[in-house]
Image 1 (tube, rainbow, N blue to C red):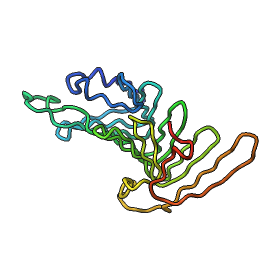
Image 2 (tube, rainbow, N blue to C red; image 1 turned 120 degrees about the vertical axis):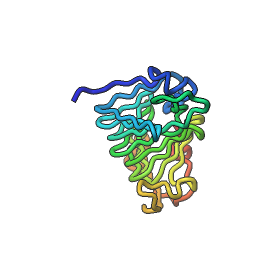
Image 3 (cartoon, rainbow, N blue to C red; image 1 turned 135 degrees about the vertical axis):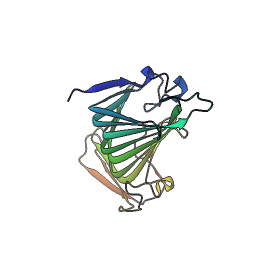
Image 4 (tube, helix red, strand yellow; image 1 turned 90 degrees about the horizontal axis):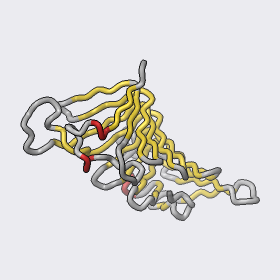
Length: 200
């Protein structure tokens, strides 16, 4: 099937400039490519599916499916699409990858909340930074500060199925220069990956 390539900026009638998501913590449009696109006007939702790649600046969010939700536009005059206001949140599901020049994160689900400027990734999270690897149940990325937290308290209830399943542990595997593998297990909780060298 022919790949669709959609610039969110092109849909100006549906998405004013302030609505542009900042998955890379940078300005500019988000460029989404996918095999299919469906829109649901009553739900103010756009669904991209099949080899989805949302790119902005040097950051990419790749997944099997990407749902983009919009808030209702106030004072609209009616008509198809006219009630779509700014982006509220973006949900990526399936085989999810968040890729930046410094790291690659894999999970089963990612939720980007526009209001908080955070991406919450859940379900077998694996963060790779060079040869170093950090594994956990949940990762929170603050796009304003580029700080990351593994299994933070805010992750409660954020697993893909809405449960608290998972080991509740963080596992880090580091490869110091000139040495072999150095493995460290840390307790769950507010484990800021700044200390683990995972800050973007």
